[in-house]
Length: 225
Image 1 (tube, rainbow, N blue to C red):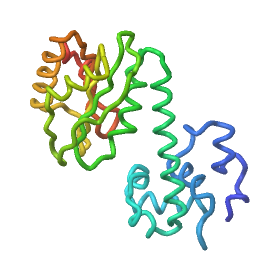
Image 2 (image 1 turned 30 degrees about the horizontal axis):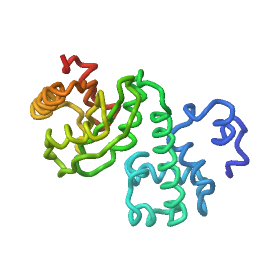
Image 3 (image 1 turned 90 degrees about the vertical axis):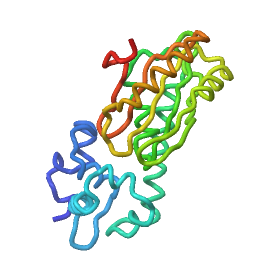
Image 4 (image 1 turned 180 degrees about the vertical axis):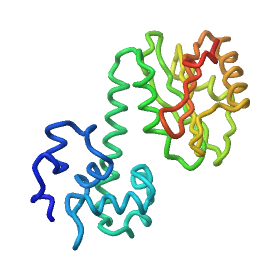
């Protein structure tokens, strides 16, 4: 049965418009992106098959071009469309964060960092540099490592903070394993960076570890005292 023959309240597009996107399942959201199915399958049926084949929605969103395009019902045009959607989301979060207001919400910061760091296959150490009113000056990915670690040089972090005239900083790095629990090395590095920056009156507001789920905040767990 075609989706157009379904009751209106069960069709993904109509359901989204009446109840909001959060009310839809992963398969329904993906079906709206796909727009059409293939012979013998509705867009929802195809979406369900793709979720099983890839292992979930995130795996589809982060698949490389070759793996994405060889799946049934997908292709180069869909891959380009998906990359445009993902980049629009990153830019939306960037504009929201950079609009000149002080950072007051850990959730806002976390969403931005997740969008920029979660899907790397190697570790990235980054900094959000802030002014004295905690408004964002810039976001910099300073160091790139391997799948299980990266070398971070406090001198370079300090130099960049001074170059942009930062008064505060938020650190962030990703764990490609998906596990957000901080290691002893993460804790030691945070203490070292905090001490180095305190010498020039630059405050460390937080250190986020980005993996699967919502990410880990040092500040929320009392690890910046």
